[in-house]
Image 1 (cartoon, rainbow, N blue to C red):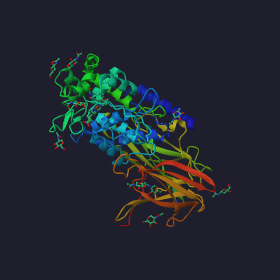
Image 2: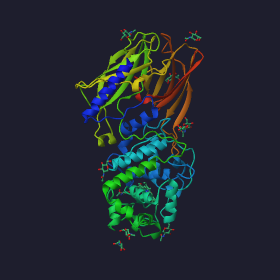
Image 3: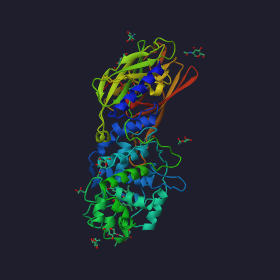
Image 4: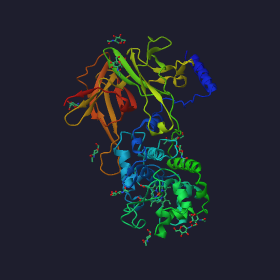
Length: 533
Ligand code: HEM
Ligand SMILES: *[C@@H]1O[C@H](CO)[C@@H](O)[C@H](O)[C@H]1NC(C)=O
Ligand SMILES: *[C@@H]1O[C@H](CO)[C@@H](O)[C@H](O)[C@H]1NC(C)=O
Ligand SMILES: *[C@@H]1O[C@H](CO)[C@@H](O)[C@H](O)[C@H]1NC(C)=O
Ligand SMILES: *[C@@H]1O[C@H](CO)[C@@H](O)[C@H](O)[C@H]1NC(C)=O
Ligand SMILES: *[C@@H]1O[C@H](CO)[C@@H](O)[C@H](O)[C@H]1NC(C)=O
Ligand SMILES: *[C@@H]1O[C@H](CO)[C@@H](O)[C@H](O)[C@H]1NC(C)=O
Ligand SMILES: *[C@@H]1O[C@H](CO)[C@@H](O)[C@H](O)[C@H]1NC(C)=O
Ligand SMILES: *[C@@H]1O[C@H](CO)[C@@H](O)[C@H](O)[C@H]1NC(C)=O
Ligand SMILES: *[C@@H]1O[C@H](CO)[C@@H](O)[C@H](O)[C@H]1NC(C)=O
Ligand SMILES: *[C@@H]1O[C@H](CO)[C@@H](O)[C@H](O)[C@H]1NC(C)=O
Ligand SMILES: *[C@@H]1O[C@H](CO)[C@@H](O)[C@H](O)[C@H]1NC(C)=O
């Protein structure tokens, strides 16, 4: 049956391709927790509100701070031995004069203490890359593809950030060690120094007038090549070109190092855009050689499935999941199918449920620039707990005369690894109190009270007041939940956790077998609220 669906699917796609005017988006292969999460943060995450329209902060802009910290963090890379790169080691390097500036701590605070974004597999270094991409786009620059998978360092790297008083030979060698040619050095510095400027309090020997809070590198706030044109027109006020202290005119030495040939080429705004997009992407993807990054994300995936949420109550198991489909179509209808795990009450074509509600997807900064739209479809399947579920899939009907599309994860379906231990989505509660709200987590186990359940929780919000801003990771053993007595072969275990926890791992021992579930995403859960204040 699935076979013929796939042929059907291929024919439908061919028809679309022949029609020629329907843009097709890349297909997502499930499961891939990191890739799905990276795509979601790029297109639907909250960080872009600090990048949209290039907002001002402490005499410069937030995107300028984010681009600078990404470069400084990456500057520890050594191509000769493959060490260093964008690894968040800057959290341990802030006492160095080369990393002076309030923008550094402010940026780390944005990434580590302000948003519920960090995850066990998506650390500060990935956030710094995401920030740079959103910042550049928010200031009108190129759209840079996003790859994730960086690994956060646990200690400082070498002190290898270039400084303005160093000579050209030192800078050329610094950039070589970081993986850039002399020509790329000229362009990358121009790309960086289109945003922000030099702050008097940070560099009093460069900006000598204390009334001058900041000397911007060019006359525009946006990410554009004014830094290049003003330099070539000899009208620039960039203090690293024309500042009173000749020793610190590093931009002049770099920009003119090839007789201005590279700067001349960047006078074309298309070339500037394209060159900066490519070089900043390479800069952000410069990581220690032991790190593997995901494929670059430059478009959203079509047909993205959210993590299913289970609940068991009164003899029925329910599974809630959402499917995001690109391009809004109010007449589209979708049916979810599933196959059972043991026994067979589902017909060979699968049990079915139609989508329950359709929502328009709110895309952020990047999606708006790309002119994207999508719908989100909610499914609430009532599953026989005895026969249970092993996998699910969808049939998408655009109701526009085109063929029905089967979304089955390339034929394998979306597999449910195990149905024996799960966070119970309707028994867990968000508890509102007169003091600190918390979450009463309830985990259902297909087994008896001799089972044991423990969790490791991940709270992205650092509780320290200065960097390094480390996430808070805690382990806990659950106890039998007296308010949810066992029923239907399920036993319920509970503990209280912080509402800030966004991911958790579960380990259960059920009937002498260890069952685990990693990276359970609580941000997609919909626990009922209970007010006890
Ligand atoms: C020889 C290489 C470089 C030198 C000597 C240098 C030097 C400086 C200095 C002195 C500042 C002022 C910082 C402050 O006042 O706190 C600055 C700001 C900045 N740099 Fe560089 N830089 C270099 C390369 C780069 C590169 C490659 C990038 C990124 C691609 C970059 C991005 C920035 C940004 C965005 C700012 C503005 C920060 C803000 O306004 O908050 N720089 N740079
Ligand atoms: C720069 O910062 C100072 C001190 O915070 C503030 O008084 C001043 O208005 C700011 N200037 C600009 C141009 O933003
Ligand atoms: C740079 O490219 C972006 C898209 O990546 C575009 O929106 C912007 O207008 C371009 N800027 C220039 C100056 O060409
Ligand atoms: C650029 O301006 C500086 C002073 O602002 C002047 O000394 C220099 O001769 C000018 N160079 C050119 C090529 O016009
Ligand atoms: C120029 O900058 C260099 C390097 O920071 C510093 O040693 C020197 O004292 C400065 N000269 C003046 C006149 O401020
Ligand atoms: C490069 O351009 C700058 C700014 O116009 C100028 O001062 C400098 O003399 C030029 N250098 C060469 C080698 O043309
Ligand atoms: C990176 O990929 C290689 C080849 O697939 C693999 O051997 C290695 O373990 C991976 N490294 C990490 C940190 O995942
Ligand atoms: C279980 O779900 C089925 C189908 O929705 C419903 O008919 C039945 O009443 C439910 N059983 C209980 C005990 O709620
Ligand atoms: C899903 O269906 C179950 C009944 O099977 C119901 O208890 C639950 O409230 C529903 N959830 C949502 C989000 O509609
Ligand atoms: C526990 O394991 C034993 C031996 O494998 C089996 O006979 C029994 O049915 C299992 N009990 C449950 C509740 O799965
Ligand atoms: C931060 O959280 C950890 C783990 O809960 C705790 O050990 C530590 O004392 C906390 N630090 C502060 C400053 O609250
Ligand atoms: C969770 O918190 C509530 C309210 O403070 C308390 O009554 C309950 O015992 C706690 N549960 C656990 C497992 O600690």
